[in-house]
Image 1 (cartoon, rainbow, N blue to C red):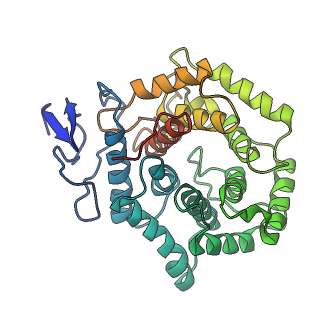
Image 2: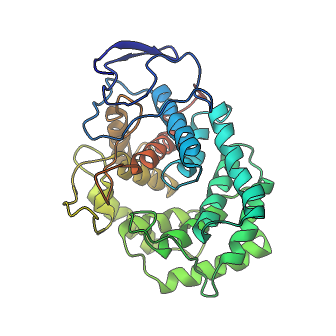
Image 3: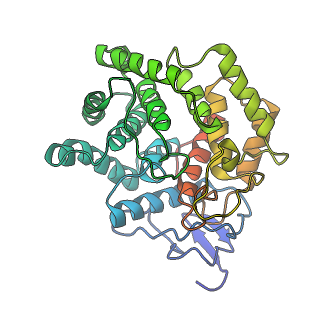
Length: 357
């Protein structure tokens, strides 16, 4: 597409669809499915900001990004289809794209792992977390696939209570063991049917607590992860530690109301370029707002309201919230997770009241 056009998408009028949106469908009469999805196009900082916030565009971006990744890559990643399973039910779960990605996650556990085993221990923890979170947001019951993922997860826990994580040098998710250990705690905490009280979960959590006590969080981002975990699991943080993290986050809020991913950790870039520590982005703002709400900060707090205003004013025309990669200026896939957290934050702050699209 080389020009701007006036288009209608699921009954929503769009003006000026971004010209660099790749194969993003201009006019769509049906929700994205495995048969008709469109590649959402590259995540680019120069994509124009939308004239108005649209939940429909956000849903369409999430669906297309997840279906595209699953079809073309055939794997699950923290930044795209795992994040999708966290966020999509906040808008609506009863859509084919969500059912499709959910089926793929269940098949990973119940078929691929049975036949070939998981690729990495990190895949086991991340899948357990995504399925448990999705179960909590949909049926409210722990599914057989999620329970099987947890069963395998505990067999992969080391004697010191930790887990072997992927270390690709890609912040904030694929960098160190601390992220994986904290994610495991979050997975147990969010799991329905009071899973955290089962004998295997209690034993595993004790190991996680001990590991976290002996391994300090290397970044503020991971301290925020611990803050999130502490809202569900006892013994992760003291009250003083929780307060300290919250106050640090308030100090990093931009004058525009948003937060910045790069400011959450002293990460080393892989392209030799400088970090942008000032520009607010989707991941930084959505992630921080979501966890602050989980930590009990009221949605009526003026600082929370300012953050929500930033999200509503900075959605891009494709429906995504752009986030610059903290590693390389190439793919910016963290934008996908940033869009998921933006939706989760909006939901947590009472900004998504009805199912849709």
